[in-house]
Image (cartoon, rainbow, N blue to C red):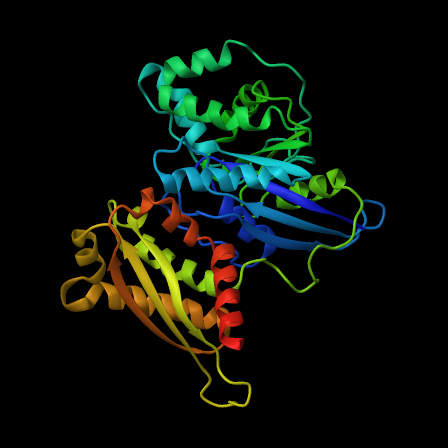
Length: 375
């Protein structure tokens, strides 16, 4: 038996949560097209059965993290701390790089962006290749081109400096670091091999594995290589548990996901959701089971509140209706969901408020309240 923790790192919107959900087969993390959707460390647990002649049974605990970016607010600093915390206890690290954005970065030297292109139609992969025609696993050579960072910086200062910030986080790690190239189904195969060669110079990666979470291309190889790298050990979680998150937090995240989808501009990033009441059905109630939930949506300005509520409450109702359907699917009961909006000026710069959003801190406070009530 093998087991261990695998930290998933990457820039915002590279597909970390999408990969986590695809690997576990569950909606462990919310996913939207907007960057910085994930704000907390989220664990997803995968049970891997033994394969005769290949590997023993294993339990992989994936740790999804917020997108790595240079912090500009207290919320950003808290998110970056979540990344560092994930690196404290890890057996393997996956560094995700979005292949489509890498193509744009490499093509920006002459002021033009190369198209991502489409995968060639009507061709079957050769043995040892993914459907995109590139090797499923690339065994890398050590060493690094000293001029690479300088060259990238001159081409695209923002992207290269943020990429360098990400790579600098893993260079001092003493565990296997895999580079996982994501969204390869959206990139022409003739652009992938030069991209892999360029990225190989950034760090002596244990493996480079191109994947498409959407098409599940390369995922089996990724899991197999992770199991090979894990130490022997017993399970950290029961077989049937797929995440460490409590239901309250998952419900809050589903509501926040709808805010991210239904609103634009600065509103999604200035919004936070806190569950104020979570009443589960009584065990004796066999019919008409209803979970009653009350949640507060925090924002920073009155204008943002107006957008969240909408004309005659239409936007808040739309957010609530969409969220309720997903929550009912998660809980397996009917749900009565009550939402209201509270203005908390500058909450993203308040260390106390930001830390109160961590579900671990919320659970501690709930336990304290319960103790006070029992006394």
